Image 1 (cartoon, helix red, strand yellow):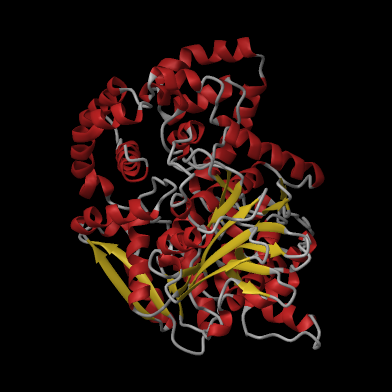
Image 2 (spheres, rainbow, N blue to C red; image 1 turned 30 degrees about the vertical axis):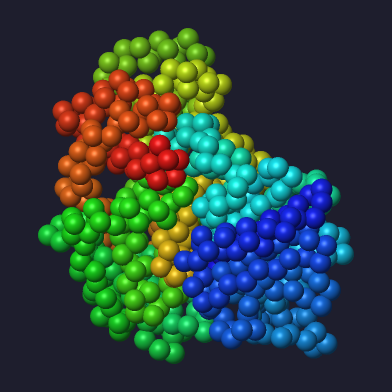
Length: 635
């Protein structure tokens, strides 16, 4: 687990200051690799790679990166290949290895830059590979998007990094807002697809690669979900297959030369991971939980403590108060050079801090289970409502308008019901996974008129429409996939990488902690999408088949009690702080950005102050965005 950087020059050799540029990039993301750093320049000076190392496997200097083979090929790599030992053993005894690292195995495996070699990898990874003979560069990101990879093509250079902040150290890359990305952020609270909030800086999407040679760049998908079912196995057989796959995934993620712990919320997913870790661990597992002083309804501390005691872990709890939240916000803004208005970042910040303090730099979590196995109660409501919504959407437009007209006055503009009706009127889909910020019907009121006019051809529904198109192509080959699977697909492709994995990577690596997600193992992902959706939502129970499979390792009460969720008491503890900051700075913010309408933001503030409904999420989004712009765009 590390940080990677690099510069490639297309038309001529790199200038003499290239090594200094990469060294500055390394320094900017030193938190990702506190144990070692390095730079490497190709013999012809067409490429310069940088690396910051967090030592997890082979703690000796033999794991130093960038790593170069005998043919002059080089790699700078971030992540873990959990099955690297099996791959190494399959390479034959005539190949001599100089280390016990997955890096060296990966370097030998991909020396021909063949995408087929990637199919053998089980892990999380983002890497850049230089082929000396071909004078070509290959950037690759893992299937789920566990490890980040950003790139920019400007001024004759291809540059890349694990974090945007390193790219901003380069003299030709400027912090200019990408207006389309901002427009979508206001809908989703996160930045979708290849976009970032910086013009000219892009994300390499999960399961994609970028190949560059002689100034030509090609980006392509190297992996897609490939269901293998459904089959006619009995429910008991399916349960056994799930628990066996999860057990193997946890076992692979216990591979480490440093201590491994877990974040334990007390819920089903994290409890299952810890239970399986205890079956593999040769030493006691360290577990970590967060509570909120005097507000027990926001956490599951009691359940986490019971689980830790039952399983025999070394359990540590951090009690967070209102002052802690106020004090940690600047650090979170610093970590999120790509904005993510998600308050759950606050507890993850403290969890990662605790793990590092205890000398536990590898952490397992339960991320991804809800998306793969339809674990949200709200998704069950979507499933029930979908047939009626489909009938309404299929009507000719005049009939839809006729039906909607008398209903329009029942719900306030911007409410969830009003927004869903608008989706039906426009022939859009019901489910917009992750659209939790401003509704399309109210978002434009916040925007400055010229900016709003520039966005006339942009619709945030296009984000979901693109994902729907991808799912439709998959469903055409696998007819068992239905609406529930569609929600799972959108959740896996959008929410998982852009929200859950992003926040875990940034907040973990900010403290030198590597986070691993067994539910997102490649075999588990394939299995989940091979199952009939009727096994995911059954008898009013979300994640039904997963819970059945876990009955052998978790108590009935842990599995089937009402889901509490993990929320942050922003309203109780930070509403006044956010409101005071917003009121004091919104005029300056609007003037400096030139993108937001002062009167529109003022009207929103008055709506917040009236407290006619809970505006906490919208207020948090405005507060976060204002703070983020001030830090990253010098607004």
